[in-house]
Image (tube, rainbow, N blue to C red):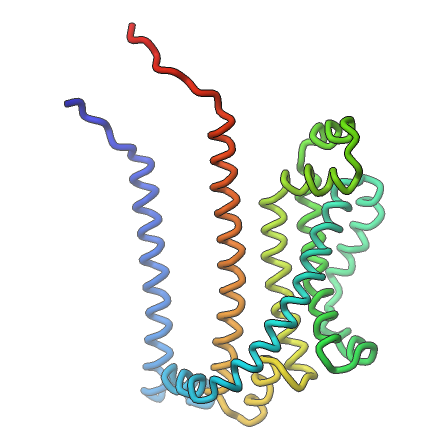
Length: 278
């Protein structure tokens, strides 16, 4: 029976991944334990940091109210994601793959990204009112610019021979973007989608906190004015859960794309028969 040597690199990689997972769990457990113990020992005033148990008690006792406001926030985030990331990705692919447009518009988008858009929110409320429309528009603009910049940067890195081949076969400009540029820049597009989506969530919550009558950000601002620290932290937990859930969803899409790409490469690889022993 022959002995098959163990792949040391693979074993070390798996061990490192396991250690990293244990470290993450230990950090989370430490934060949870400190959140419960530190306020109970009086090391931090409960007005500044309520215990985790009291925060969860408020979250459960007012679950209906939190769920209703969270539904409002989810609807606004979903609509803003369609505009910010959907249009932002297509626009970024067009800008990044077209030299003349890139030179004309990319500096403008970069300059706008440097502007603190939060100070412009009163203008959005004056134009669109204090309802959901102003929050969706503000969050869309807030997440649009980084999505465009990241996607355009990824579109610039693809092989130009791919688009030239598609053009020679009669593909239209839209077909080149959708079937050539987009698949070739998927990793950058997903990274831009992750960043833009996170900023969309931030934009919606900030808009709800500044001037709104509904949404999880509105609840957070309401409990803050009432000095209801458990309510504030309960709202923060829901916002964190929303952001983490979105990030995990994008990671799942990215992993599925990587697996599918690996299968396609394996299917295209020519089969090799067994070699004859010399």
